[in-house]
Structure formats: structure tokens, C-alpha cells
Length: 333
Length: 167
Image 1: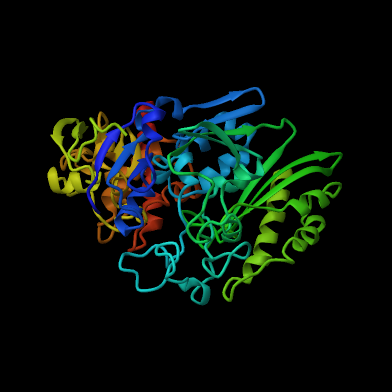
Image 2 (image 1 turned 45 degrees about the horizontal axis):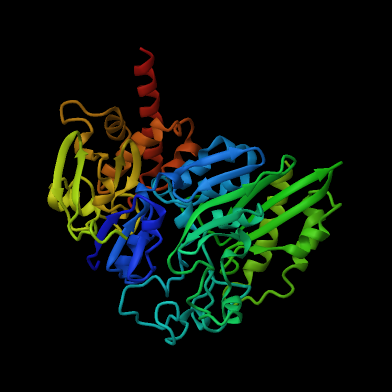
């Protein structure tokens, strides 16, 4: 790991001067230290957010839950207001990583983690192409082992998915992300914070390297989660071992019921694209149906007609539809 | 960034196993390397060095964390407990006793991390039944696969520690 200078920021102003390349922000460090070891990043300076107390709060004020960027996954997952008001988020946080990592990793950093694509997560010098690591070097996963990769939104430059569990829950909850920068504060909906490779290309950005709408010298400060009193929610994570593993696919469901039928549904899928994938069309068509697997699965399957699975991940289509159905059933239970 | 305070060798004051440490540290030094190389506390093991195995688990202010995913400087002002601070040869911690009683180890490499993690797992209240223990001990990999014995040891230690508190 290349050495760097270190400072402890006492205010957001100090922290938001980090440009993300020469100087970077550290929160928990569970992701950043691995970037440093692999050579994904090699800043000259690291600014520690730990001194910025205002970022540590979790507050519930009426129908709005505010979670500071420095709240750890363990703190969010175990907070009573989150467990009762937004169980999908508590479940997603506690399904992520391990108890040890959840005690360090923050909700701010979690959304800024990078893909777990094995071609991306390798030490320099990379023996294969990866456009995320080196622009123009190619995408080894496109024709390589790509069972963990995207079925939506990818381009030939990159087929990675985003691995966050909480991001999927936040998207299903219509949460907002508060961002601070030199020009003040702004809000980005959690469902549109990440970019698919195709969206990045559409914005004129590098499709492999642009992953979020966060700009240099901006900092995530908090998440604002609107709480709907009638909402029930659940997070389903499908993985190859029961715990401490990234998702093959995941699904977050936030539903409201009226006389046994679905009155409102918000659904997001994880690990199918480089962003939480909202099933907007299905959400409308589910209204009026009973929250049973038999009733919702045919509607959910229609959402995958435009999926573009790769050679190794056709299984994700059926698995993701099934996970979404299970999330609805568990939310209603 | 405060240029005045930016330092390649920041001052670090914290406690390890109750002993105050005050020194300078290269900013990039992980807690794991600091414990092993600077303090010669080699009970904390370096397995994967990327947060995948849990063998470097220590307690920071009583919470279990991976020492390989923590910069030493991030521990300023904190209280770190390693396996060297748990029990003595003559008076083992109940969790250590239970690991021996249940054969909760074979090669032993993951054991210091397992012990620290189990102490936290019990303190968190996540040691009521085998499924809960398996979920909340999942951050510690044992490639000898002593998992059934580890689970039994954690459950037994939790029961003994509860009995001791009741007494």
C-alpha cells in the first residue's frame, strides 16, 4: 500500500475538499483499504470523517427517518426506529457482510463500494482487461466468467453489478440521499444515485468508470427515508452460502395492503445491474392482486422480457423474479 | 483537507489490552500490522488481509472488528482488546475453556479471532441457539471446518457466563 498523509476532519467543509483521486475520504475504511491494497486507488492524502459528529446521527422525526452517513451498518440494522419503520433497510444492513465488518462499515461508504467482479478485484498489474481499472483495456468478464454479472443496463465496456444490499432497500423506500459540496447541499433520489453503464454512456461519461452521480469534492451526508405508516417491507437475499456472502440476486419489497389486496408496491432488485433495479411497470400492475406467489409471479416475470443475460447468468432472470415474489410474500406476512 | 494537520506520521495514542500506547505511526499502517509488527502481539493473525476470513478479529471499544480493515490511526483514543488481553494460561476465559472442552479448533490459526468474535457474539446477545450462533459467527472462517464444535463451544460458554452472572 502506498503511503499517504492523514488528517482528521472536524467539519464537513474540511472533508469536502477531497477530490476523490489525490485526496480521498475515509469513513469505516472496510472498502477503501482494499482499494489501496489492490491499487484501485492510491491517494496522496486521506481525510478521516470520524471527527464530523453530525454525520453519526440516526433520527426519527414523525414520518421522516434521517440516517447520517457515518452510521454503521450494525447501528442502522439494530436501530429500533429503522426496524419498526423500515424493516427492509434493517434486514438489508444485517444481511450485508459479517458482524465485524458491519461494526465498521458505514451507510455512507456502503453505497460507494465498487463491484465484486473478480476481474476488477485483482492486484496490479492486471493480467486481463478491465475498463473500470484501465480505460480502454477491455472487459474480460464480457466473454469470460460472468455468472455474477449484469442482466440489465450493461454495455460492452463493462458488465459489472453493484453489490450493495442497503442501496436496494433505500431504492425501494424512495429514500433520498443528501449530498454536500462546495456549492452547497443537494438531494439525489436513492433509486437514481447509481448509474448503469448504459446510463453513464448516455450522459457522455465513461460507461465503465462512472458509477454514481456523486461529483468530486462532494460528500454523502445523510439518507432521508420517508416512513409510510401503512407500509410493510422485506428484503430477500439469495446467495451461495447462508451468511457472509454477496448476493446472486436480492429483492426489496415495500407494499401496502387494502382488504387483502396490494394497494401499493415498490420493488427493487439487487445484483442484476450496476444500480438498484426498480420494477416500475410491475409495481403498477400488482395493485389489486393478493400478495401470494401465484398471483404476483406472472406479473413479475413480464419485467424480464427486456433483460439481456450474459452467457453464464441466464439463471438470474428466474431467480430475480422469484426473489421479488418472495419479498412481497414476506412483506405481507 | 487541513494542510497544517496533514501528516504522514500522525501521532497515535490509544490503549491495547489496558496498556497506554503513545507513538507515531505511518498513516497507512493497519491496526493488524501495528499489533503484530510494532507491539509484537502476534496472537492476532493475518489470514486473508482483506476482510474475508475474520482471523484478525479484535475488540475496539468492546465491538468486534477486522484489524486488517482498520487503520491504526483510526483507533486514536480507543481501547483495543486482542487475544493477549483475554484470560491467562492459569485462568482461561470461559470462552477459551469452552473451545478446549468442545474441541473447537484443529490447527488453531483462526482460534484467536474466533475467541474474540465469540466474546462479542455472547455480549451482543446472539448466542441463544445454534442458528443464531452460526449466523453471528459467520464472519470467522475455519478451514479445518470445526464449525459444529465452535457452535457448541459458544453456546456452552454463553450458558456458563450467564450462570456465573446469576450466581
